Image (cartoon, rainbow, N blue to C red; front, side, top):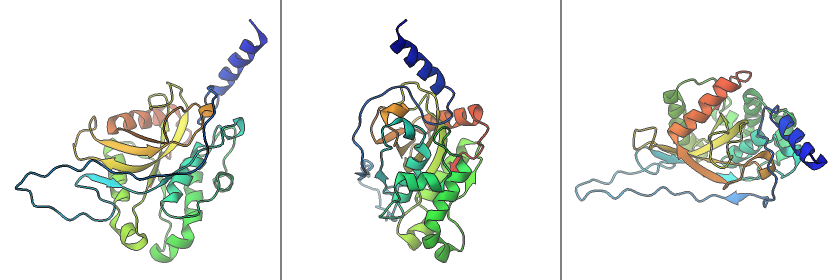
Length: 260
């Protein structure tokens, strides 16, 4: 066996021990924010339907969206476990124009480049960035980390936050939600399995069926971290719950799996 093959095999074996978004595939990818203009298909009302007014953040009954921007983690080994910081940047982009750079976010969330970050630390960082705006209006931080163990609870938090009327009236926008997953069953990861943080910015629960209802979220990792796909993904609620259940089962060291 050549030395090159041995090195690759050792690298892959080492990567399997890492708890955060790391993969063994390497490629290049452009870096930089991507503006998001997200629109759900509008249902065509029957002739007898009476049009109903929609609030800001609500697309139609059972649907909602918050405008966010896309971010890319640097495509190098040092940033292979920065998915939490990247997801935080996406979340913060709904709240602020000048989003902190990824190193500033990573420092605030006590990110360990070898292990990533915990849900509690990610939440503390989010609130630290948002408190100057949120605290005067609400008197308390807006986000908290929770251990959520049922799909109904997850859906309730997503739906409540993205079309949160208090936030819309006070700040002019809804509230993105961050969740913890395992990547193995998620699109773009080629079955690579690692812990992962994503920010959900839109949902369509109008079908009332987990196999048909969907959520949309941002992906920030580079191909070196294992991700090969678009900046924004839409998956079924059922698929999201599979990935979230896998996290609860495979990484109980960090029970905080929903930040909302």
